[in-house]
Image (cartoon, rainbow, N blue to C red):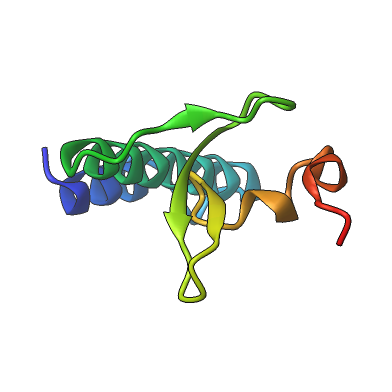
Length: 93
């Protein structure tokens, strides 16, 4: 099943006009499908997915334009933005 087909299935399987809970459930399913698709595509191109040493979340490393390494979560945000232990990784300059 393609990514588009998975999203359409998550959307059409829920009666959106009936209740807010159904909409929220469908949104969660869409987010789950998107997260799985991102992870699958990253693995297909050979990106090594690792776990944060402190909080355990899955992430991968990228090199920024200025040559520094940045941890990126499976939600495609910088892990330092959502890790409660981020300050422990900062280097004192």
